[in-house]
Image (cartoon, rainbow, N blue to C red; front, side):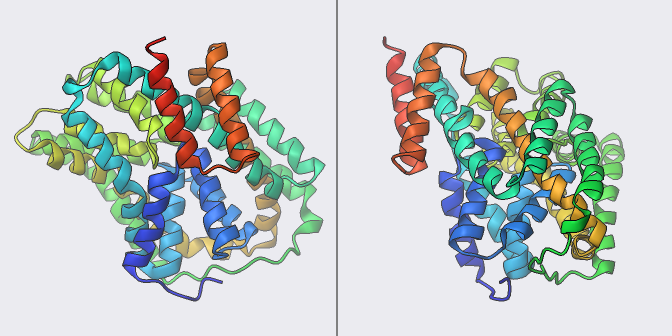
Length: 399
């Protein structure tokens, strides 16, 4: 199922289409990827894809981007991983840099309405529920896994910390060892990796060397570019839970140091939630909004690369060991439960921060309900529903 290879340009175009249409944040992205690579193209089985998602949930950084990098790598090696990332990331990065450069030319009140409309439709309910429903039907087909999903969602919401998610996954894995021991004979497609174990250790060594070495380099040779690379690399290396969790860390690194004011920071974060693609492209907006000796585009791209480089290093470093782990009988039992727990984490994300930050009045709920029916009943394309939501949100500012 993974034997055929594709050219850099082919993989780039596949992920570019996803980068242009994947609204809704990490939870929705994983649903889009499943639709594209499990159902439509059949590059992965459901169980193999779910295992890959579970692995990336364990890693710090943007889980959906890491899944995309891994998919590209499995299909066409290192160049495939690069093509997948560039295609998926480029659209939102360009939009956010353009927004940063031209922020002063927009009517802020009208723009706020458009962003609110986009958030309600794309981020809050419709697209995320659609994606979550598809994953839950596949990964939580029986009462035990539905229970684990619900338990995990409650656990994560009641213990709202980075480590709450990690602890929930560990507990779910332990439950899986006890409950699903008899079901581990399930067959799954192997995912052959062209990276040797030695190369894997080398990638991990580079990851930790940069994490430890960049702060010292910043002290020895203090300048804006090294400081930015250090700050954004650290954010991409230490944040579990996706783009929403990186907000406070970036806010302390960027706003508290005086590089950017808080109003500009929050305006960019609102747009980052409304555009398709990974939330971590918010880094491109932050870099492009700062004043420096280089152009806005150069600083934006430097910050973008710095926050995503850890994802490449971690994926390349872990994949050589992953196939051996997932073939282990005990690991298979744990993954049964962990995959259900991942759905629970996404369900919790649907409520907090997505629902709570977007649905706060009747008007918002009505827009989200209409969008959900348009997606799941009338099967309208997501890009059309999101575009209509943004236009409606902008028009409502005049009412």
